[in-house]
Image (cartoon, rainbow, N blue to C red; front, side, top):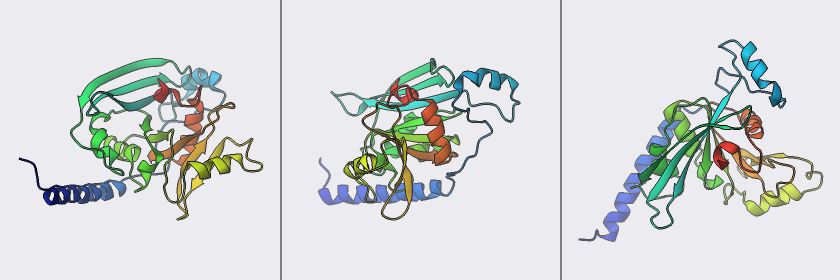
Length: 244
C-alpha cells in the first residue's frame, strides 16, 4: 500500500526537524580555529623529512593526509563506493587505500548530505579532506566536512569543484571576481556572502587552472591553515587525496 502524500510530507518534515536539532547540537562542538598538535610544513616540502626527524612528539610535522569520497553507481544511485585514500604529504604518493561498496537508504536532501553519507566516511585520521559535491552544502554552517569532523573529532576540510547559489554567491559572481582587475595573479580569494559571513575560499590550485576549487573549513582547522594544506596537496586542480 502506498503512503498518503500528506503522511509522507509530515514524515519528511519531522525527519528534517530532527536533523536540524542534531546539526545544532553538533554545531556547538564545532571548532573553526586550529586545534591540532602537529605543524604544517612550509612550501619547501623537500625539507619535510629532515624536519620530521628533528621534531618532538608535540610538534611533529603533518605527514599523512587522507581523502574520503562516495562515488555512485550510474545504474542504481542508492549503491555507492566509499573510498579512503591516504597520501604522504611529502611525496604525494598513496600509502594506503581502502574501499567498500555500500547501499544508501537515506534520500539526498539539500543541506542534509551528511545524514546520507557520513556513516560510510567515519575514519579516524590525522587530517582528512572531504569531497563535497557542491559548495552549497555548507549553507547551514554544518555541512558534511563539519559533521564528520565533529563526530570523529579530527581536523577536516571540505573541497568542492562546483559552487551553487548560496548567500548571494554563485559561479558567475566568482568568475567575475577572478577576472577582476588586478586579480589575475592572485591564487586565493576569500568568499564572503551577502550576510557578511566568510563561507570559505576559492583557489586556483595550479598556474594553468582555468577553474578554481572551493575550500570550506570542517572542524579543528582554520581557513588559513586549510588553504596552506590544500596548496601542499595539489599537483593538478583537485587535491591529490580527493583526485586519487
